[in-house]
Picture 1: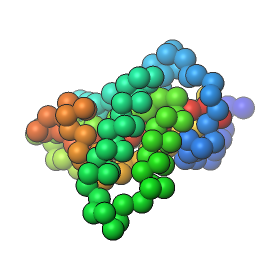
Picture 2: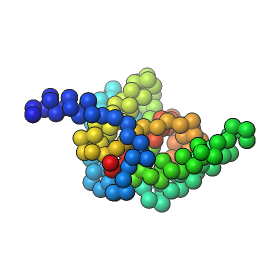
Picture 3: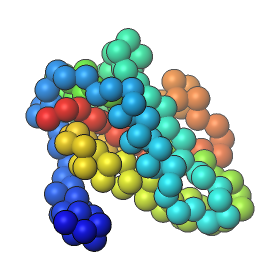
Length: 169
């Protein structure tokens, strides 16, 4: 198979695969590094490299799950609170081997939409690298991420665009 055929096959196979379908097999540090490296190869105007990623594994990931559950509980009016949604937040994070926060850093050098687009292309590279290596993944952008500024150390010129979940399938 030539490169174009391989690329076409990977693009055609790319899907969001959710944590409920992940196994308990750990993703190696080398593979996570490769996935994140592929993200840094995304095109970006004026080389601003606007993406910022933070990896959550193990204890940090469990703390993220608890924090997101607490935010959900604190921000939902009692009549809208759903126990199933509360439990799903924790389940998805804990079932994933690795969760990566996706943050865009606005440089002020180019229009904000260009930096959001570049960050999105970086995430697409992560998707394609996961697909090529049989790793399930998906990008989630729940409203709760707006309240994670402290744990993600988000600065004034940054915005969290969501979380990228990864697990073996």
